[in-house]
Image 1 (cartoon, rainbow, N blue to C red):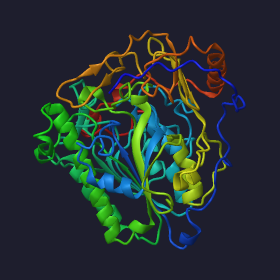
Image 2: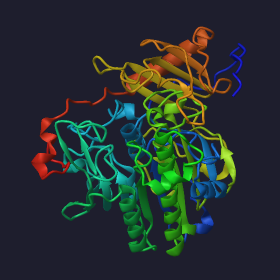
Image 3: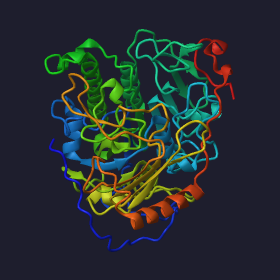
Length: 519
């Protein structure tokens, strides 16, 4: 890719906003029904989250990736080219489930660690709870990662009728185990994390050692759809484990890339993505078999940027999962199905993951929201391609953990301000702030300038989407304006809830399984 010229300095003529930072009221955005002609049948919501999927790792961004089922949905629907999440798993999930910025719920710092005696605050109403209020049957399969130290944090207590999957942030794909360090390294503790929970029943500890987890999840998803009464609206949250590390996949999937990818880690990662795509195809087939597909709205996106360490590609964007550069928070995604009127194009309107809560509850499910949230209803923009009602969003305020990252950031129209160290943790160091060129036969780095712990960045994303040029010294008036906006967001943010991990999490205390009971 040719190097981009430095943006020409221009005069800032006018700013058309009032300085505000509080959450939007429940009346924000459109409240139109998905389609007046479709009111007689319920809209099923199939929401699919990929885990650590890179921006460049689907076929519409890199045609060497084999993802025909997602490509078909993208062709039939809308590719979302300007959808933002948080930089890591838990903060994105809390934002999705509550419609509130993670920095306003205390969930913005890193993720919920395996032994953390905390979780998504129980006084916050969830997306699944709001959908249940208007008659939805609610299911989730795969990764939870919203807290598990007590029953009140688990899926059945947060609005889901049925759950099958793992409570933590990751596990071994075959043994379904992890230590307090995750599935990557041995630790003091180790246990199995695979459960089936049905509301009103005793939790089932699943023993399926040697079975590849994604195949287990595939079977359960198809069972849930098969057993569902299609006259009832369904909310199915598919929270894929793929392509989160460890990069381990049955050889037949990696074999698709045997001739094109010489790097073994990248080959396995690519195989994980293709396997995930195959599950998407089976979900579609089952919905069609049940006569539910035409009444289904399908949303798919990554929960954050890809992990360069495990050979994900965020090309051409700068940054890794865990950073607040575009490669860490810009999510590859799509929307397709019922109610989407304009299709077959790339949508560049600005959206944030918090917007999905009010959009699905109000405009798709025709419910109401009476509490304050930060998301705005973007249904009119999603369904017709019209201008998004969102012009800005808080990226993060995370400045209160001693001896760790101090960072605050926002997006305002085409401008992006970052103050402090641009990552979820000081452990995120170079080369995670760089850019990596495909093909992945080694880490071909396009090095970025060195990172200082207290830098202020101002980027013009329209003219510099890859964040190569810091314009903080070029636009002092604009910088001051955005710093005032960020200060206003600081006023309504709360410090992260990030307590020391508890030794009482030890799975040996609970029959060898990661289980609630230690907070």
